[in-house]
Length: 635
Image (cartoon, rainbow, N blue to C red; front, side, top):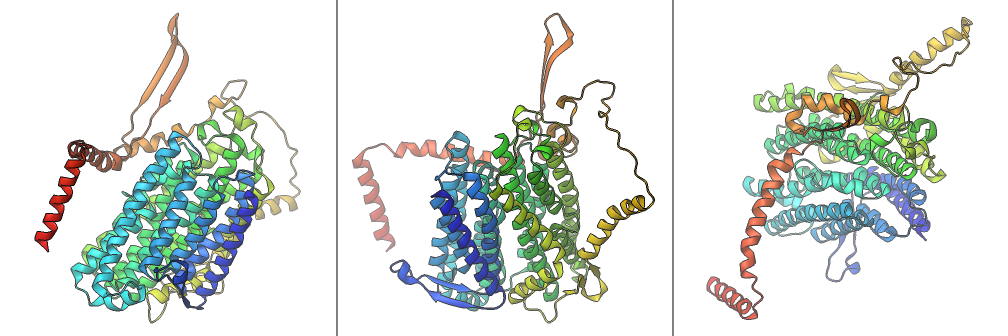
């Protein structure tokens, strides 16, 4: 039953993929489906932007659902919720009015909540509680913004908003944009609304984590695109500035916490915050360019943001599937307990390597192309001649460069500590390769990362068409010419195919030359030099904590680490040490500065509010009488 459910989910994803790709090609349609919900007035609509995100959901769901069949095995828990989760994510981009959107959005949130808490335990319960609070706080902001906009425009249909909203005053439009942005950013997991993400992703099953991180958070970004370009028309430049600054904080903060974490799935969750920040940088640049009339540059920045959204869906779902294979084989997510998996799980190790190279932005894979496009968009801010905005763009360029360097270090740690060297535990030493369905799914994900990189010209042309439907521009500023991407005006050009050939040549040419020269040295096998010790042990290896220690020292203001050192000496002499335990846990600065003070205030208020909850029916009737009298006076 469970396997059949995941097969059905894969088929549903296939239908969504076909429908989404057709929408991207311009096959628009709309449908009234009010009969599904009495008095609901449900309406669906497909356009190029909706088609793009439906295709992201559908295409990603196919390998993840194949993977889930092997990962979950005969476990029937969560199959129905998983089907609802996939279906609701396909419906969210198609929603054409407030009621349809609210129903699809809430179904997506409730289904993902059930999947987070399906494995019982204190950690899963806490993660589910935080996720439920944040997602419904976000829904409250969304409904407030949508209801205000519907009241002011006289319609609940999105197409009517796009026509009527530009006539509203600037303060009203900014209020609605702020509410919608808060709701969508909470779902996207941008700092400081990210607190649910590093809790929910590790608690959920790995195939669910792959969809939540690879796909679900993108729907928050989809909503931001709709609100910033469609529903409210062209906004002021400060909208773009706000998104740029939020993107800078999310990108740098996310990668810093990923770099310091030793839990493999939580590391990937923090990395999702980083990549949401990169997409927000591109989206914020597009909004700012549009506000200043630079439509061609806005088109370039939006294309880069959409490209990175597609890329992140590919490599993050791949990485979560590989992490799930490690958890499936070893029973642990702790990098300190792994090591040596490359020999025991070669397929999983290869998949994680491809995903790590892609997310680190290494050529010729897909992450490199979208980050390169984002740089090209940011660097052209010199055309604006607005000093304040130029300063924000300069900060974004620096943050994106820092993020790229730290991401490389982060995934060198994740792959090197987790897969190389010697096993650090019996579980890692006894690890086994994943089942066939899981290997097939990871292979599809790795192939997508390669294809999206090598086929950059075709991808840019397709996403440029989607972006042009949102931001019409006279001439696109980036275009594909054969195998090369060109930014107009001779600003820059790049070919991932040529880069791949150069890299392959750098590896193969020396080997060919040595072979032709007859250099065939006989291999000599010997133990690795152990610095004078006769036997190599896992204690000689770098740990995840030791690898991250230099970064926690440099960025201690962000990490606020707490050093914990426990030394157990021999009872006869303190110079003979039996055991040393070292830990350097980090603290979340957002938790300490935002959420903990807010929690203290709320607890103080609720403790005082307990006094009015006396349990007396007479007192409650008195409350009702007082409210009725107040309403009569106001009426």
